Image 1 (cartoon, rainbow, N blue to C red):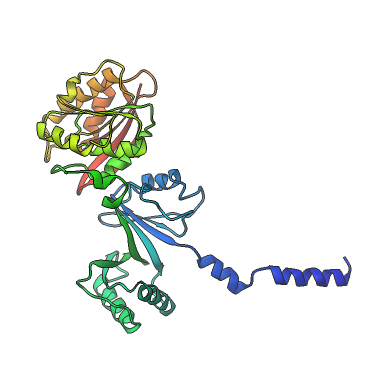
Image 2: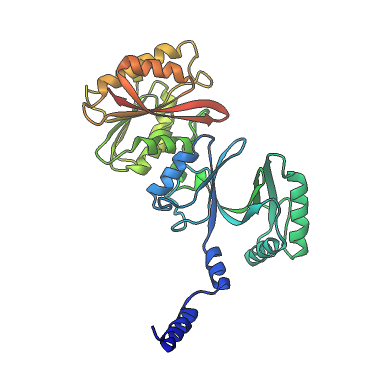
Length: 362
């Protein structure tokens, strides 16, 4: 190549190539997010992110663990979450700043500018796992620095500014959506004491992979939470719910009134009035022996419920997603009924350890 042509090419490259400052600006564009879910469900939530096309294979997703939550940090999403996305998340947060060890002055300036632009009074809420950060000291310092920069803070304000600290890592977040604000949940009329949290029901429904052709049964349906969350993923499926408690049946019918193909009946899930080989998917929150059930009687109950599920199971494509407080008891009942385990997901439900089982017919 001649020298004049080489110089011209170099000049063109200098004009078209991004400067170091431009590359840095590009790297910080976009929105970062923090999602919190029930302990044990971070990986399931990550799979839902991909299902919703919010996260591509290879995109960064950092899983961290708090005392009462799993946390996912996402530097970038393909788009902002919609109301019908991320049903497994208990909280969806827009992450304003994040880093390690110490919040810098430039981060405080950027955070203060964002908060001033909102014009909303906020209260600072700090959670800290590990020994690096002291939540009280960090909260006081951050409040002082933000106030000095003109941010309006009020300990009685309704809107929080969350600071999640896990060991040396910190995330300062503004809430974007809570679990109750997910699509369709406002239509639920009533909750029963001890009902399964909707986010855990959503995780079970997601693991079940429901589709429009499924005939779905919850043999201990309670207030209908599992059926409602499964309908959010497969609204055109057919749903059957059974419960012995007439009050629960009444509540479930009210909660599922918007689903035309939902059929709720009072009865015993161990002897459902449904034909053989009729059900393609079963979801159930089996009694823990706390609010409902009895730990001594659960062994026989699990065995009888699983035996009835086996009778109802369609020959092809059947699966069951069950939540149990005693994993080994359920594993024994499943094996005796002719099911094989595809997956176990340990989770905590209202502070109690439990296990989600995904079962297939042997």
